[in-house]
Length: 162
Image (cartoon, rainbow, N blue to C red; front, side, top):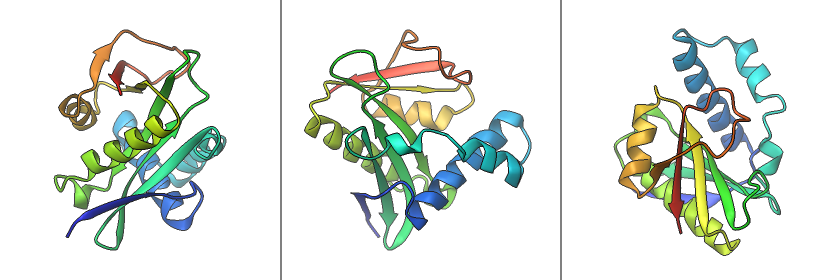
């Protein structure tokens, strides 16, 4: 099996399911209990996903074989710094972790960012998302000082020059 990654509307059935799974996992890990369906729905409502479409961004879905197995997003308008954009919603379903999907998703978003003229890709994450932090470090992202304070859950910030 191999990974393929392609742009897809953030509200397609596969993309929506992946975004829901992403939010379920990060919320459940944060609260250290399973997130309820209502909490997941509340989190997805008004989450800014509309920015994950041209001209303000892009959303990609990764498939392992034919299975929708991961996703990632690029947001161009969130950054106040010219030439910078943000990486967001990087997620690989647990059954597909360790198969190269995270790297494939990052490569796809970085390629899209370059096509938009982005020179610096940034992201925020939390302390407890150790797998994500390891993925970013493995692929050339370095920890940087906080570049925003709008996300109350952000505890670590990373950046990569493209």
